[in-house]
Amino acid sequence: MLTHYHTEVNGHSIHYVIAGKGRPVLLLHGWPETWYAWRYIIPELAKEYTVIAPDLTGLGDSTAPADFTPATVAETMFLLVQQLGYTDILLAGHDWGGNIAYLYASAHPEQVSKLVILDIGVMNTALENRPLLARTGKNLWWFPFHMTEALPEQLIEGRERIYLNWFYQQSTFNKAPFEDISEYVRCYSAPGAMGRSFTYYRHVLDTIDINMAAPKLHMPVLALGGDHGFGSFPAQSFGAVADNVQGGVIANCGHYIAEEQPEALLGYLFEFFR
Image 1 (cartoon, rainbow, N blue to C red):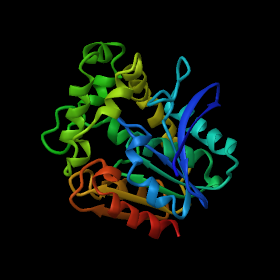
Image 2 (cartoon, rainbow, N blue to C red; image 1 turned 90 degrees about the horizontal axis):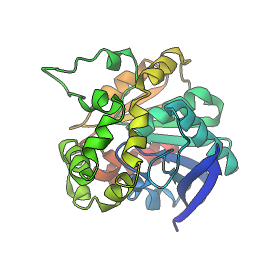
Image 3 (cartoon, rainbow, N blue to C red; image 1 turned 60 degrees about the vertical axis):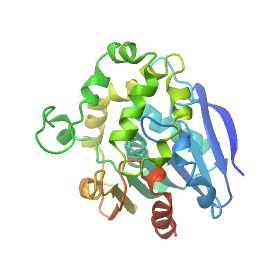
Image 4 (tube, one colour; image 1 turned 180 degrees about the horizontal axis):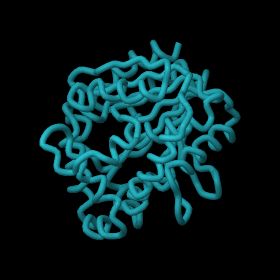
């Protein structure tokens, strides 16, 4: 049974869902999503594990301080886990949640037994130096757009459904899970919500600096990509910052692995976590 909670962590309210019994698994969602991204994963994983899926700081139904950074979000997630009484977890993250998971594991390696990264690479200078007008590969135009102060949220206000749907349609192979995006629209069209979500992007350069100075990871890492997403890139990218990396590419899948191919992802998770 899945239960919703709100608790104060680091001076603000964090919404999270929890289900199951057993070793704790922390699931961190990406942008533009919420805990709801894990809705197909939680019921099955909860048969063997205690599954904790929060809304990241400032996203979904979690509030945020006046200013925050991805590093402080990682620390908030760590403090949430501590508050729940766990000191050794299995950790998985997608998109921005993958970057938060990497910051978490880098800062507290002794408290992360295994790390799973979904369709994202390490934020490092390769991202910083990526050309905006690339002739080949993915054009990540939204990074500098979201990093721009104040303007993006003003342009998007009242058009949240259109804006979010562009990402879901452009970045997926299996589009069926995104036929109804009302829950995401509800969360990202709340007052100030889109601007809070852009705070993550406005601290990309700070995150790169932290990642470049981070020690190498020694816990087992599973890095997966969709064959229509980043493919083998996550494993290649994390192979440079961790010494025990397994890779995998999930077929018929774009960026949103947990929603597009939940059964395939569950197969990987059950095998890796045991």
